[in-house]
Image 1 (cartoon, rainbow over the protein chains, first blue to last red):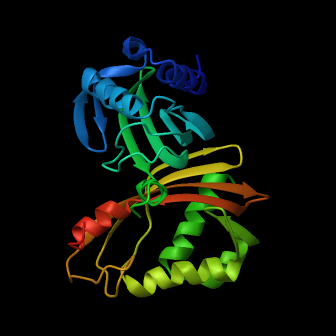
Image 2 (image 1 turned 60 degrees about the horizontal axis):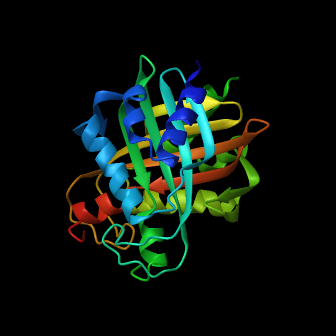
Length: 128
Length: 128
């Protein structure tokens, strides 16, 4: 299976909250922005975001793959229900981007370099 | 010439401050994070950053190309000499990432989606 198909399968698992399926997509240890996490810690991080934002949906706006690398600009259009990045929810819909790179090994993610537009999130939640 | 080679030529032009050469790499109008700029405005933005940070150097840490898209994680290790993102310089060296996507058309950049780790910059400049 090509990396683009695998990656879209990974996003589908996140969007359907099938965190148990991350076994198929993520190594037992994954380095996220320089920090080594177990797959369980990685899943818990994303689960935490989806608890804060029940309608969180990972939408790949731009997607490139090259060798073992995947690069994606994810677009989020959602309504936080609990504090997100420390900002209390307003009840209003917000939208923001994440530009993220992944290095795969043997078809599973082993390293992630993510930048989220936190400034835009803060501004939309009235704290920018 | 393949897109990777063109893109590395673009970074070399930036690193050598050959902003006149951007004619070869950037369309007359370029959309940067949703805002339409002339090539001159785009060059002036990067020139402004390099005035604030004389040793600013664009180092491609991760680079993928796919169709008309380039995705790059740029790494900066530099010493601001003037305010950067509104933060006064400390005289200390800082390092930070930019995760950026470009859409090329006929070998030149026509759209850019950039996220810079502004939180890390603010933290290192003592304002995080």
